[in-house]
Structure formats: structure tokens, C-alpha cells
Image 1 (tube, rainbow, N blue to C red):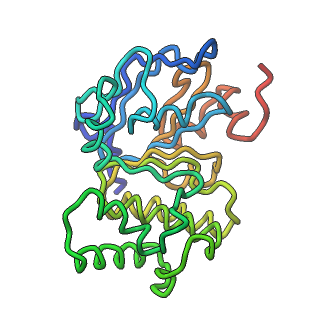
Image 2 (image 1 turned 90 degrees about the vertical axis):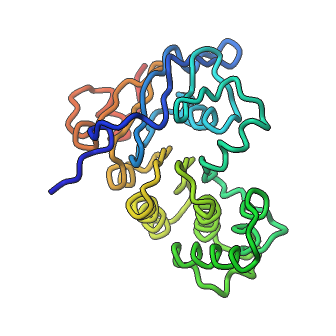
Length: 258
């Protein structure tokens, strides 16, 4: 029996975008961004270049602020919070950056351990146990923990970046183009991990990607950004079955003629 989707479960949303407007100078990004994300779901955000996909997740960790409207996390409006007030939120929301964003001067072990040392008061034994568990999760050999990022392939760097984001045991993980630049084999590995982490840990995930195969594989719902708002939001099945030419053209990689 198929499990109920999170948005069908009757629980309150964990994240809400409430009539958000955003612009950079004369360029409008959102006229009215308004939708909910529910605990434990994987929502994939699709859209053309410049439609505001990365802007959306950066507002969740305080890197950007809306011009109008609210971005709510557990009913807490994030927009008015100052940087030091976002610290507790950032412990609960982790971001996997497009370029992994590893510290070149730190080993694999120290990169994964870094947020634990900064945010939690753990013993060295506890830190070692957590890092070892994360290396096991991503199937990276233990001997690589003493390597530096410059000695790793792009795919392994992405895995280490993912492990560092998960090690804090966050409620929400934000993935910004997690498979960009990877070979097909590494792409499959990352996509499987996104799904595995959601299923095993129940985290809420927001994924920005251009990988349609991955989106169809791990998503509960897909949001399509167009014309400065959520143009369509639905399950994988609903998006595949959509008759709207704009959606079908995007899914098939046909350029927008607008």
C-alpha cells in the first residue's frame, strides 16, 4: 500500500512562503510566491534560469530576505531575524551547496566534523562516531577521511558535502543542484542518497535540480516556477500528466518561446 503523501496527512506545514515578493533592482523575481512544504516530504523545485529557484532556499537560511511577505519555519517568520538570531534555525536547516563548499585546508574528517565543533558540545569520541557514521552512510571508504578536498573527485566532494550537511541531524535539507557536473554514475549515487536520507531519517528536503530523472525518482511533489510565481505544484504523476504546454516543454527540454 502506498504511503500517504505528507501534504495529505493532515499535519501542519513545516515551511510556508506567504505572498512573498522579491526583486533585485528592476528585475522582479517573485510577484506572489505562496505555498506550503510539509514535514517529511521531498519537494523538487524546477524552473528556467533566473526564475528564483536558489533565491527561494537562500531565504530559508537568511542569506536573502523577502521584500514583502513572510517565510515561515514552524510558524516563525524568518524575514525579521538578524544574523545571530538565525543560528538556531541554521542548526535545523542544512544546505548542500552546488560546489560542495568544502574547506580546502581541512581533511575530509575535519570538514564533516566542522559543524559539530562549532554548534554542539560533543566529546571527541562522539564526534568521531558521528563522522564515521556519515562516511558509512555515503559509502566512502574510511581511509579517505584523512585526504584533502583537492585530492578527491567531484563526485566524492559532493558526497562529503552531503555528509557534512546531514551530520547535524537537521529537520530540513536544502539541495542546490546536487548533481551538476557529475558523471551519470555519481549522479545516480547522489539521487539514491537523497531518497535514502528522506526515507530513513524522515527529513524534509527541498531539491533544486535540472535532472529530470532524479526529480521523478525522489520527489513527493514538484514545484514549477514560471512568471514570478509557482506556476504548477503537484505530485510526480500530476506533473507528468499535465497537459499545459509550458510544463511539458520544460520537462522535455524544449526552450520557452516567450
